[in-house]
Length: 256
Length: 234
Ligand SMILES: Nc1ncnc2c1ncn2[C@@H]1O[C@H](COP(=O)(O)OP(=O)(O)OP(=O)(O)O)[C@@H](O)[C@H]1O
Ligand SMILES: [Mg+2]
Image (cartoon, rainbow over all chains, first blue to last red; front, top):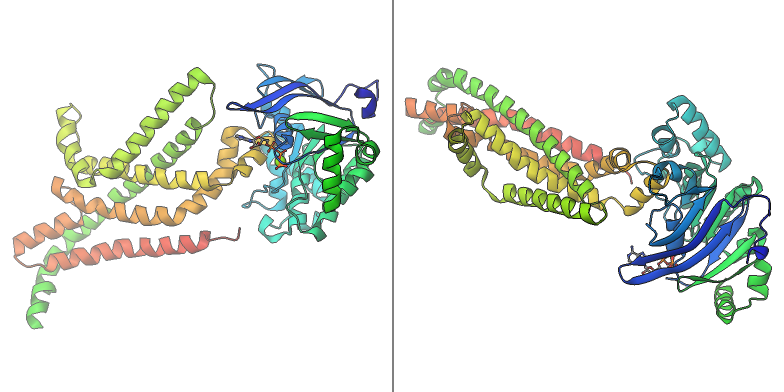
């Protein structure tokens, strides 16, 4: 398993998930997920609707409370009894399908809010950091714009800047381009590509297969709450070992 | 026509009772102001409390928060069902019997404030739950606490949604200060009414109506302005 991950041996994983389980009431949605993500690695998660991809991602910062197993982020056991979950979350960026920008704040306000309130950085310094983050996603000129005045692609880039400003150890993306018009997808993927170049560790749920082929170190196929197969993109897309992976890849490839 | 004017716009009678009406206006004004401040802030506190009590909790604690939440909802529904006048009279006669000395003014203030707090809580709450779940998730994912998220992200959006209905409800309940008349609060209606009984002429009532107009029309207009001001781009 690990050999296929392209993980360097000397560094400990940024994300280390073991035996992760999650039930909603009596339905078990995650049935024992083992997953490790090395520093600077970009992993893609694919799988049919309802397979538990979002739930897995949301367990990684405890937006969803796991029912069992363990999760370490950069060495911190995020489920340890006394853990300061807000401090943990500052170091785990999350980008949502629906952007979830704060509509009553400007782009800069969105990016600096957590810097000031959660990271306790003084306003002037937070503004500098916020501007830097907006510049990284190519939106330096939009700092005064409200989300309602931005295109979907721009909103999602502001959302990415909001996560980046906190200097996360890892960024989780849940279908970051699914809500975008096709012509706006490229700008967001470009930002993700730049992030990868800069060495950010990323876990991405998405069905942008071309991007996965070009940029992912590893592709993970999930179904029914388990990881069915994982490997380099060439293997998962070109020579999948499991019949279910083959079927799924053939189906979504047909769509693109 | 003369007769009508003599009856309702009798200058002599009006002049005589104008000072009383003016002093009634003053009483109505500060009573209304106190009711608005108390009612709206208590309503906000209740809505925030309800939000906190609605959070997911581990088992033994969740019984307590559940019970508290139900009592909060019961209070709100109770206050919204009882006519304000009944509450005023109840407090006026009931509280002294419990050893709590309360004047008509206090009883009216308390009753209207509680009623307004209940309606305001429902309106704030409706605003709070109509803010998209994703707003909570985004804010919490950046490390903001429950309270920080509520104050900086959720409430500004919720209050904006709540302002139009809140303005209407506040005006409606504040006009209820006239009910204080029955427990001898010397507000506008009380003054107008006693003017009527002394002079056997309804002109003081006309004055009273004008006084209400002078007081509440600006509030209604300000309310309208606030509504358009906060109907913002989303
Ligand atoms: N809060 C919840 N309460 C109950 N069931 C839930 C909840 N969230 C998710 N589920 C269920 O868990 C399963 C997995 O959901 P999840 O959102 O993780 O799937 P997904 O792989 O992200 O799907 P999609 O591709 O459609 O986004 C689904 O059957 C879903 O109905
Ligand atoms: Mg999903």
